[in-house]
Image (tube, rainbow, N blue to C red; front, side, top):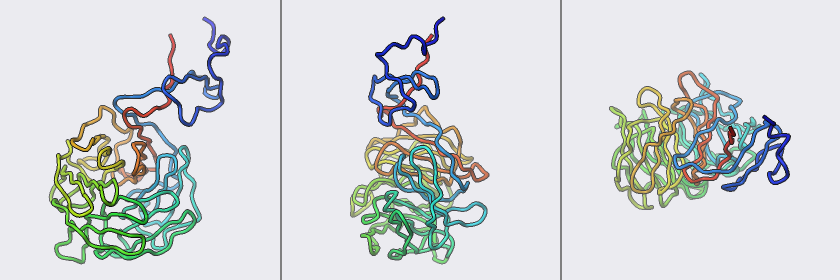
Length: 329
């Protein structure tokens, strides 16, 4: 049988690297991998292996998108302020580090305008906020309620932080929500299900809180925020915490976490209900970072299996064009 490389003709594009944004039905031959590929979609979504972090860690935070991601802080066994950026294929260690190294914090925003909030240390429920401008981290306005393992969503100038733990307070678990305007935090509503280690995505006026830990048990509770108050809606299919998350109030994805044990499960939310995806991550993990707050192209970054890992996985949501290898027989 003749090899495709010798009979390909001129109707199929021949390239050394895959197109960045393939269209459905587009076909090309990749001379680097010697494979025939095409642009297609999946009704279930898909996970793919991405580049490894330079520093394996868990309890870290993330921001940005799948092709312009940011990972910062966490623990390698000792707390770090290390920051890395992602270009869609590889992580680069940046000269910038968090001014206050921390773990169990939360992050949101973009690769050039990110926020880091809360954590432990420097306190067992820190109120520290730091802002990243693409070059360096600088102090922002302090949270009104110090906390670690909170959740967050939004952008650097319009963010939301909710839930978490403050060991110095009684009770230590908090459902308090705060809004950030780029300079200071304002306390607003309280979650209906007080919890920590939950997932969060969306915007300051259309936020989503899901899963988490109540202090006694894993939760599958889901709540929507309208800029004023939280409303309980349909719960997730699996109760878990320390998970990854991405998307919006009407198009979200939740992945991994402690069930326990560590989970590789993926669920998607359409604004009404959660659906368990038949597709799972290759590596079950928890305490991982995530990126992709405003799209259904997400990143699962590092985390704990245990031990702490450096692996990254990339999520492509249902209906999104993606590259597929074509097998001919």
